[in-house]
Length: 193
Length: 193
Image (cartoon, rainbow over all chains, first blue to last red; front, top):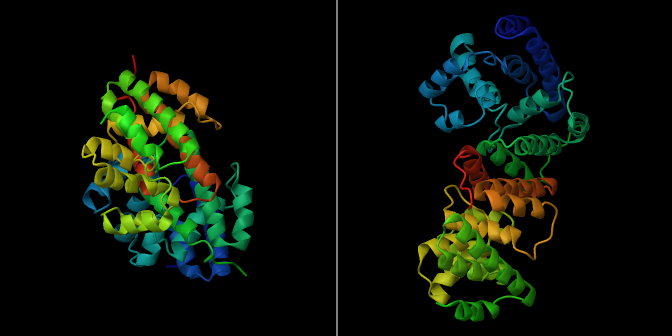
């Protein structure tokens, strides 16, 4: 599938603002993929479709979670997490993308997981630092992203988990698994060119 | 076992400073037990023995973890966590205490776990707020402890997890399970008298 075709499909699913965000994620994902030796085409497609399910109703997302083998404990956590695995299901079934690396990058782009692949990490980080993002700490993560994929992700995760703690929100266990994984593998960082 | 007997046993295992901390935990644990309807005698004994293994060498603790069914993943995390489950093993085998509620309160006093009992919570919180403790945020948790066991614990966990994040340290998954449990059961708080 080429870029224009993919963008046309996703444009119908999301708001104009979310579409601009998607273009930003695409741009950042391709740049990170280039820098860290990840397949640029897979990064492009995963980025374009990462928020495919963002505007589905909670009822529809819950139904897909219940019937497509998505861990049911997700329903106990913030609904912001749901669109990612639901998106992976719909992008496979409705759009017809079958590449599991791309589908996983969509699936884990909000929660993270233990054992994130380099493509997963590129999409997670691109979603955090794309040029339209503007929140406290984002510039620091952008700077780190120029030096190390993993160090940038550690800072992004620390910011995200702190954000949840400060708002009395639960932290999805896979997010901590992702963070712990990064901390324990420090020293194995992937440095960019 | 009476208090004097228990204190005599533990005094031989720990430093003078740690013994003073233990007396503080005992005092706070009995007070919290009274306030929140927990068995005061169990709270007293669990508090006295909670740091029984604090001064064992890492080699000895690792050996006990390896051979007594303690989850091996603990060894990948901060060694500060090890003395709690090791203490539960030694307090059972060497001191001869067989009450599982007391042993669990010792076992989980540093990591926490999903499904903490009220006795577990009292020991965890007493260890955090005992009168000799002096660190940023402790007074706020002491004040919350007068109103709600659970709200005080949520704040203590938020402080502890933030502390770990700020120092680039991993967060043991059971600690997040404990925190998430408290957040999800908000509204079921146990209020004191």
